[in-house]
Structure formats: structure tokens, C-alpha cells
Amino acid sequence: MTVSAISRYEFKARDRVENFHGNQIVYWHWEEHLMFCAPIALPMPPSMPFRAALETVLPGCYGAHPDWSKIDWSKVTWMLDSRPFKPNMDASLAENNIGHKSVLRFWTPGLQGIDGIPTC
Amino acid sequence: MNAMPPLKQRKLSLKERYSHLTRGLGWETTYQPMDKVFPYVSYEGIKIHDWEAWEDPFRLTMDAYWKYQAEKERKLYAVIESFAQNNGHLNITDARYVNALKLFLTGVSPLEYSAHRGYAHVGRHFVGAGPRIACQMQAIDELRHAQTQMHTMSHYNKFFDGLHDARHMHDRVWYLSVPKSFFEDACSAGPFEFLTSISFSFEYVLTNLLFVPFMSGAAYNGDMATVTFGFSAQSDEARHMTLGLEIIKFMLEQDEGNVPIVQRWIDKWFWRGYRLLGLVSMMMDYMLPKRIMSWAEAWEMYFEQAGDALFEDLSRYGIRKPKYHEVASKEKHRLSHEVWSIFYNYTHAAAFHTWLPTEDEMKWLSAKYPDTFDKYYRPRFKCWSEMAAEGKRFYNPTLPQLCTTCQIPMGFTEPDDPTTICFRSAEYKGERYHFCSDGCKDIFCYEPEKYVQSWLPVHQIYMGNCGGAEVKDVLDWYHLNFGVDNFDYEGSPDQKLWDEWQAQKAANPV
Image 1 (tube, rainbow over the protein chains, first blue to last red):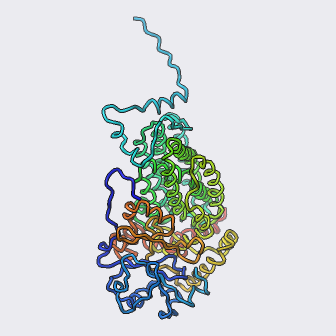
Image 2 (image 1 turned 180 degrees about the vertical axis):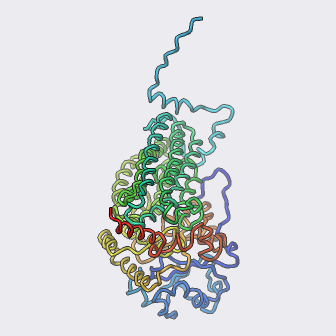
Image 3 (image 1 turned 90 degrees about the horizontal axis):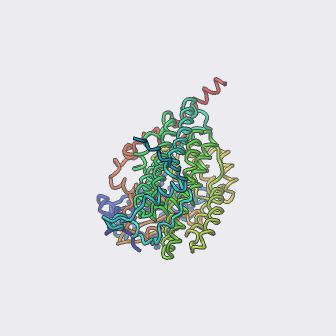
């Protein structure tokens, strides 16, 4: 449907990618660890290798959680924009089809929150 | 010359005076066509055949209005004055309570001012003089509420942090974009949608969940100044609620074609209002040192029971309960815990303090939320308290993803699973958009042109529009004092001052 308006009503998306100075926004969410209350938003260059995001950026976001250092990345399951996803670790975000405002959700088998409580 | 005896004027009855004020002051324009003088009354699709059918049950004339309001003002300012002279702030239950006032002053009082502007605007644009007068009176009420709230709370600003620049903060601080964007959504709609959103959905359906908790909360926690403000506003609120119900019935009775439009607005504004009330839920369950009732109990009493009766009454017009009301009921056992968690995560960027509930408070929460608190939330507080004890109070170091519609961090969980975040998304003109719920997604999808303009604070920070890249830079831009207004209550200057007062009290018992 369309908005009711008294005249032409068209605006550019305020959050389009060119407003982020060469970065794109990527949302990450570590499932079953709701001590982190919500998914996080990170500005990242599309050329960043996937591995670099995991090894250099995410530890600063999630490292405070005792489960973080125990993650075996080869066992992690992923969803990218609501579809199952297998990242190519050495390819860039863009080559992995991770675009502006993509959502990456990941599950860490065996690590489901402190004492196995997913809200922790 | 013989002087004529003065004409003895018959005094008009209240009904006659009201009729002169409303019907007597309206006329059909002749220099300009009516649709040019009232350009906003038809584009929303609402059809009105007879403006004279408008019933204003209050029939308040201006002279009576000024008289009542002046009387209320005199009483209120006498109480505020004596509260200040008697150091009333020393009688509150605990300084943590003041954080509820900080949230109110920065989040709600500026909305009163926006409401003033909104009603002044629609009070100009309705064709019928009855609704015009009702809106103009409400516009003056809302201005009075904004002003008296600021005056009431200014006393606390002398002693406590975070109350110094509410107006500026309202326009900039990340979580205040939630109430701000809610109201701007309403004010940028047409006059009929504005009244449906604010007068009906907010003032009529949901207001008891905003005002009662804050004002009873004030009474329970020894804040007599705020209680008095509440009483002073109460009779205005009754008039506002009546306007809300009247506008809905008026639209529904005027034309059958209005029914689906009104229903869609009720659906939209119920959900938007409910999401906004998430802030109240955490206030009730976590921020009041002495609690009134739980959020779940308030929801049951004020929405589930009262709402049932209201929508039963409206069903004869073909109106049903708002869409997703059942989701709100499913969420009632977790809402406040999820919202408090968001603010606990990000207190380093907020204008008020958060804290861990005490053991007694957790007992209360367990009793009020027997199915969820011990299972999902108590263990989290245990983790956080262990981290705090090691000197590593948990703060989330990364900015959160926000819902495009309500602008709240995406901290809400699936309706049937309190352990999994609810993700919803849509694409519009090649761009992805994300939502916290089906309710927020539907609102976007109906009018995407409106919400593609959302000023999402997290994205604005990343675009470089909010003073800089570090938390401290952004807080400067918010006019927050870093290390004073933000962070945990434990160790805050507010706490230090309060503890000193308590020690003095103990040393000098009266």
C-alpha cells in the first residue's frame, strides 16, 4: 500500500549504503546468549575477509562472555538473511553475499549460555 | 434628555453559551472555497457528512475552562512550593526512584509539548466547530502539562543528575528516539489519524498504563510533588479520553467506508503505543523501590479486562480488537525483563542509572512472574552480579540493531519462545529493513515511504552525525555528563549523596 499524502511523497532511504563512508552495516547475533540483549550492528568494509571479522572484530564484542573462548568455529552453524549459510572464511564479506544490512545469526553447538541457560 | 433604563440582559444558560461558542462561531466560507480553507480533512479517505452530529459531552465554555484551570494551578503551585521548602526530596523511598523521574522528564514531558502542537494544528483543521474547540482546549491542557511537569521536577534537578536538559536530550539520545518518533509519526499524519493515534489509542486505550503507574509509583515512593501534578492533570485526562472515544464513534457513525480505515489505525496505534509502554513496564518492575503492581497485572487489568469491554462495545460498528493484542498478552511475562536488560546492557550511554535488583526485589519478581523469572532472568542477574563483584560490571560494548519502526533495540523474543530473538524483515526498493515483531513489520509495509526516513540513532552514530565515534563524544553531543549521569547506580554521585543524607539522618534522629 502507499502512504496517504497531500502531495508527492517520496524520499530516499535514510540508511542507504553511501551514507556510511565506504562501510556497510552488518548485523550479527550470537544465538542462545541473551546476556547480550540484542543483535549487534557493525560498520564493516565489504572487502573485509570473513575470517578477519571473526578474529579481529567479534572478540571485542563478545569476549566478555565465558563461552566465547570455547567456540569451535568449524562446528558453528550460520544463517544469512534467513537462509542457511556456510561462510567461505578467506573470502570477503561481499564475496560471501553479505550485503548492507544483512543479518548473520550463528549457533555454537554445546555452548548455549552459562549453565546451558540461553538467556545468559 | 431622559436616560434610557439599562437593558436587563438575560444570563445565558451553560448550554446556550456552549452552543454560541461552538456552532455560533463556525461558518461556511465564501471568499475561498471550504476545501481550500480546510485542506487536510479529506485526503485520509474519511468521509464526514454532517459535522453538526458531533457531540461534545463536556460542553465546556472558555470562561469555565479558565476558571477550573486557574484553580488547579493555584493548588499545584502551593504544593510544589511547600515540597521545595520542606526538602520533600528527602522523604522519597530511595534515590533509585529518581531515575523513573529522569525517564519521565526526558521521555514523556516533551511528548506533552508535542501533543500541544499536534492538537493546536488539528484544532485549526477540522471543519466542525465542536471538535475544533475540543482540540484547542486540549492543546492548552497539554502545554500546561508540559510546563507543570517541568516545574514539579525542577526541584529534583537541584540535587540529582540527568535532569538538566530534557528537551535537548529528547531530540538526540538513542532511546528517546522511541517516544520522539512515535509522536512525530502521529503529528505527520492527517487530523483524523492523529486523533485516532493520540486521543483514542493512547489517551483512551493505553493511558492507564502510563499515568497510573507513574502517579501511583510517585505516591508509593513518597514523591508528593509528582502525585499532586497527577491530580492536577487527572480531570483534563478525563476530558481527553472522552474526546478519544467521541472521535472514533463520530467517524464510525458518519460513513461505513470509514470503518476499515479506522480499524487499520487502531491496529497500528495499538501496537506502536504498546511498544512505547515497554519503557513503563521496566519502570514498574525494576525502577520503583516500592512497587505498586507488576506489569503483567497492570496489563491484565487495564488492557485485557478494560479493553475487552471497550471493544465489545465497538463491535456493533464492525470494529474488532487490535491486531496482535494476543502477542502483547504472550509477552507480558517477559517484557519488563527484556527491556531492563537492554538498559542494563547500555547504561553507559543513558541519562539514568540501572542496577541489579536486590534479593528481596528478586523474590517479588519470582512471585509475580512464577513461570519466567527464576527460569530465564534470575540466572542472568546472578551472572551479572558475579561479574560486578569481580569489578567487571557488564556493559555491552557494541551498539545494537534497532527495529526500523519502533526504534527499540531488537531485544524482544519470539511470541512462543522467550529464548530466541524475534527477527522480521522486508525489502523495499532494493533496501533491507528489519523489525522486532510482526506488528512493527506490518506498520512499515503499509507505509514504507514514511519509515524509510527513520532516524535510527545507531546508524546515525555510524554515519558520523552524532558528535564522534567514541561513547564519550556521543554523550557530549547528547549533553550528558560522562561518569555522572550514566553508568550503574552503584558508585554514582546520586548514590553517594543519598547515602550521605541517610547517614546524617541516622546521626541526628528527630
